[in-house]
Image 1 (cartoon, rainbow, N blue to C red):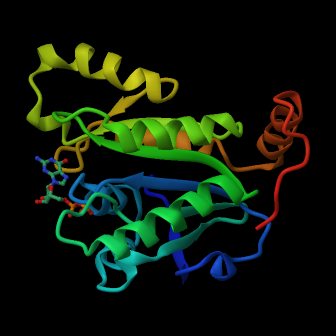
Image 2 (image 1 turned 135 degrees about the horizontal axis):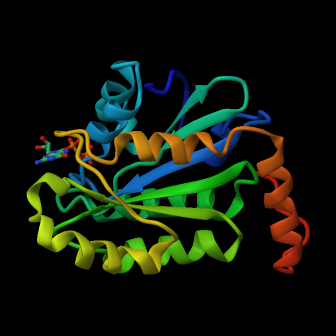
Length: 210
Ligand code: GDP
């Protein structure tokens, strides 16, 4: 079953983040990691991936609602070599603002090219999310380019980012249903309560509002 996602808004600054009572699952990765292709495989609406590639919207956070209680947030791709430095720095701040301040964030899907492995940015991003009690779902993309004999090694290399990494191929469909299921576990109040309980237990107490 594909996720039925509806585009809601693009935000270029924190004051553009929607005010709603949804659990957000954010999807992050460096440019060319295969984010648009993966989002396209996850979602029923073709427009989702198109949105993620629309000029201008590659520099915004794009919010999609799923059902009554869930949302997907497509974060801008980072590490684009030809992007002017000031623009890349601005995007990094926007992503960081979202990851550190957003109370609605329930899980962060971090995409890593399975052949390339996690680099400094992905490791730092995973750490920042976990530090505030946000579950990280590590994904190795384009796994069709791996040999089967490499799977165990690549999964082990992704494990430090978060629990139960998944190898995905947007091309062949591997891992897509499993990722969909993981995302759908964030629907519902019980997770929000668990999230708040976790934040209190971790000593952060009050969560910052956007
Ligand atoms: P984005 O920049 O992260 O949105 O990446 P895209 O989805 O545009 O993909 C970047 C490149 O990787 C394109 O040439 C895609 O065709 C290719 N690609 C994406 N997903 C896969 C995959 O699962 N397998 C393979 N072999 N190539 C892929």
